[in-house]
Amino acid sequence: MATVVKKRAVTTVKESGEWSGLLVGIYTLWLKHMRKFRSSPVEILFTLATPVLWMLLFGVCMTGMVTEFQGGLGYQAFITPGVMLLTGLTAAILGGTTLLLERVNGTLKEYLVAPIPRLAVLLGSMTSGLTKAILQAIAVLVAGCVLDSTLVFRVLPFLAAIGVVALFCLGFVGLASAFASQAKSMESYHSLIMVMNLPVLFISNALYPLEIMPSTLRGLALLNPTTYAVDACRILLFGTKPEIGLLIDLVVLVLFMFGGLYYGYRSFNKVMQKIGA
Image: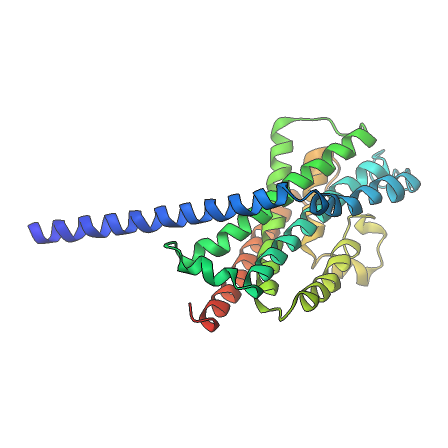
């Protein structure tokens, strides 16, 4: 009887220590990446430059073209959710770049010598990428409010929209981690990402409604998680008529998130096995 109690106590302490080490490892690596991000204004400006240009140039020039489709919603407001998600996607891709650089220069091996679980290395990179994505998505949303007054700030819909952004970005954080784990060099990583980046934006409802798309393009758009994220954000932030439906949007985004994270985890594990971790 006494022996059994002792074994249970030891097991509990061991599990508690493992969880503690995991959380400490995640926080430490997250803090390191965020400090580096904060001290690199070039990275911040580079990430925000493209969406700001979209909103200032493309959005302003095309204002009014989709009013008839969205019940009076101006084009600047119409494209704000899509541009916000594009910014989050770019931040997620840059998070994968950080992981790739650490793998190439040997920093990843140094992490694994530390007394933290191997999973903490991956989750630390993913959480920092997600944090950057959400912060920059909020910045774009604020810029959209300045350029178009259609958005009325309400706490719960705003937080729900940020949750949608988080689901969307987590899926791409997982994919970016998987690509970064498999890429042979920085050039091959960015080549692969560029092939994916623009189609994610254009083959969706980010810039134009689904109802005006040709049937073939509409079918492809329905395979794109961006379409569901944009639809959900428009419903929550602007109260527009759903193109798909909020419940379907959330189900697809949750499935996409788990799929991306699982793929990233498997790819990361394979890399760790190759380097002898």
